[in-house]
Length: 174
Image (tube, rainbow, N blue to C red):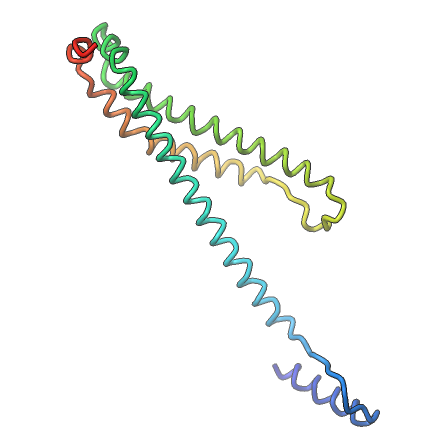
């Protein structure tokens, strides 16, 4: 602040010496500009994180719904498997693996699509060198870990429901 005030004082004195009475000038403080930029970037990160979180939640609800429908439609199959000796744990694990397969497949397709889009973006001639998009390995690993957790959480309810199917009731219902 003191440097900005001193700069303005010197510039005003030089303008008066030259007889300039009109025109404007602006002295920018780099630290203030950096603080503003940091605030904008932090806000942008929070918004992107919020959108990503909402996307993960919607994906989890979608996976859970698909699995619940799968349990309902495959009730007889589950009953037959239980009747021939499959344990509740095996049924539970099977549906959890199915939930993981769905979320991880979607995640890998998403990472592949993002990678392809970053390669396409490199052909944009107006793109500044410092703004070239890329996907870091850390980001890809973090997304896979998050998807694994979302898949497990989303699959627990339907897997429990599938494991709770009684063989006799499932076969009688058919």
